[in-house]
Image (cartoon, rainbow, N blue to C red):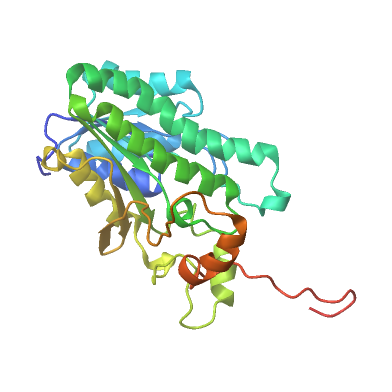
Amino acid sequence: MGDWLKGKVAVVTGAGGGIGRHVVLALAAEGAKVVVNDLGGSATGVGSSTRAADVVVEEVKKAGGQAASNYDSVTSMEGGERIIKTALDAFGRLDILVTCAGILRDRMLFNMEEAEWDAVLNTHLKGTFACVKPASVLFRQQRSGRIITFTSTSGLYGNVGQANYSSAKAAIYGFTKVIALDLGRYGVTANCISPMAGTRMTLTEEYKAAAARRKPGARPNTGIDMDMEKLDPADVAPPVVYLASDQAANVNGQVLYVAGPQIAVVAHPRPVRSIYKPGVWTVDELVHVAPQMLTFGLVNPAPPVESKPEGAKV
């Protein structure tokens, strides 16, 4: 047991397994008292159970730490408020909020149903807001606090078949930037983790099938040359603990990409090439100038595929 977080109280949502569980164990190992929130549903958000949260709480207690369970859904404001209240009721304060809760309902955009969109956005995006909002009131009053949210490479770069998930994760990135600006003056920091790790949400049957079809040496189009299967979710926890500690008091509004042994600060969006002229550009001017001075070298991430004639074998 360490003491980097001695005397601190943390809430971790979606903490009954995967990355969330490892975050809880790491926070507790550094002296924090932790509220373990998990609805106990499937990776698609179906069902509920108290077992997921309770098992992790018992792990913490057996290791000599202190933890309390919470089973509320993050998808309602009332649920978020109860999650935060659990920390106050059990341990008398709150210092750290980590929002790991999430589900997947992948489908190609042209087949995605409204319910699939809503379920994922409600869990990831609204679920983050529902917990951050009541926590922000406390943090502003006590003029201290650490908020760590979770985005994804899917949110930063996009991913096939994940319009709902990518949108939610991209929005969480933007939301975290706003939290940092709104609360920074009160001594509160908000940062985002973009993890790559093998969990039940990432090692899906679809992913395994795609990996089996992958040519030797090829990787998914994420910009990361690593096998998901080999990335331990436990590796994501130490950077979270660091961001939650007083040693990271000057780190605010940042995104840390974490994949196994690699931790990187993600660059903020910025102009990489521009053109200028006095006055407003006309379409005729852009048609001639843009390909030469602005859009040259850009690569289409999904170029058109020649359609097969009807009846042709695929």
